[in-house]
Amino acid sequence: MYDFEQRENEKQREKEEVEMNRKNDLNDVRIVLSTAAGRRFLKRIMRECAVRENIFHSDAMVMAATAGRQSVGNDLLKDVIAVAPLAVPVVLGLIEESTKE
Image 1 (cartoon, helix red, strand yellow):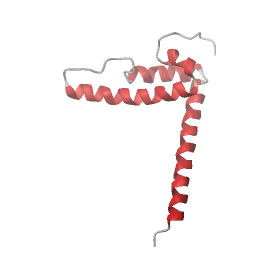
Image 2: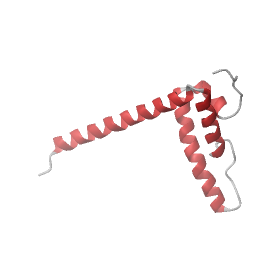
Image 3: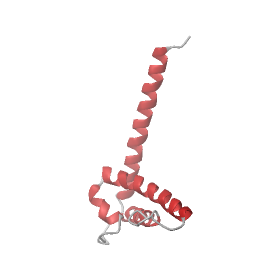
């Protein structure tokens, strides 16, 4: 027999696990952003993911590959915005930060 209460408990545990994973992900981004080396690393990732580039290309395969990379970069950018919106211009390479740590 199907146990509705057990299923609800499972759903609640799954929801809590997703929330905890999200908090951990954002905390990881916060830690990476806390150092100049981490910000440089994210800046390189954003550049490699073509976050600020136009993805359109006459070759559909090239365009699909660029769109996939850009999607990953956009997801990471959303996390940066969530934890440190003032770091966005730095990780996108729009401004240079001072060399002080």
